Length: 381
Image (cartoon, rainbow, N blue to C red; front, side, top):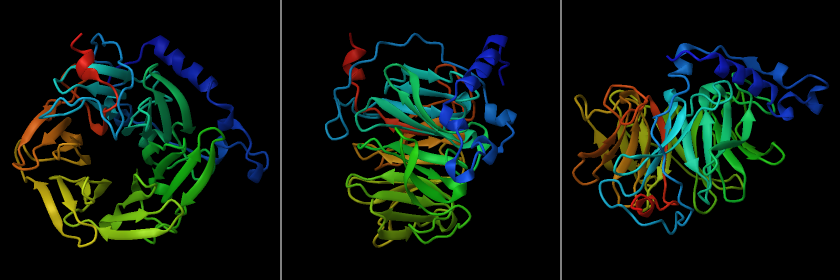
């Protein structure tokens, strides 16, 4: 772990003094009791701090303008990785974007460990201009402006857990929706919440803190995934029982299915043909694609030992070409697996060796695909 210099420590004090007033404002429902007092402080361990404030140290290229979308992506790089990826490099406390040629092209190191530490998942906004980030063991979520590399919005109180307004208890898998609403799972509060960033109010909630059981959407049991779908529905992942459920935006259950061969489901996602892809956060880990109607496995990656074995993969996505990309968290790498041969055809990070310099990651826990910026053309200039 890196030792913070004095100026970094002073920055922490300044950051605390400039937290949004809404964090300290009184909750009308609780009289004059400050919201902060209604939360429970969480001790920060050495593991949670990770490597401290680190950077790859490379000179970053100029950011190309947004010219693509998820429906009409920028030109592909082809195999093995068609687009750059932004990685939530959790224990390096940074976001980092890697091109298919493994060049570091964008980076957001923690500006301050008190307010930004342990980024867990990262997802682009629908317009490609913002990044939605959650920090499970820092108990907050952020919006990061991609172009300016600045935190533009925060919800939750750092190092403080709770279930009332402004608090989380292990937030996971946050997304910024097209209408501006923030969607996130709040694992230990057993709920999914929709938040209005402008007012910081919870617009909608599925599940109830203290009532952790599988009966979606009324009750949820440790949900660690809340994936928005194209039609507005949400795919919810619950850890106990490996339940994957689809719920309409107005709160109606569309279907629920238990993921086969999965002991600890992490962040289920849809595939292009309507199947479900989910990582099994275990050792050895696996990735399963299954039909939610028949519950049958249509594809599976599982290796018991050796270089190809997964150790606690936390997110698997289907690439536009059908191959699979995933975080292999405890082996400190991101992999692309060929869908047909099940061979590892691309890797970033050095297997079993954490680090922060180019070519290294430290517990990569989330990723998203950058189909918005034409880095392929920009890097040729």
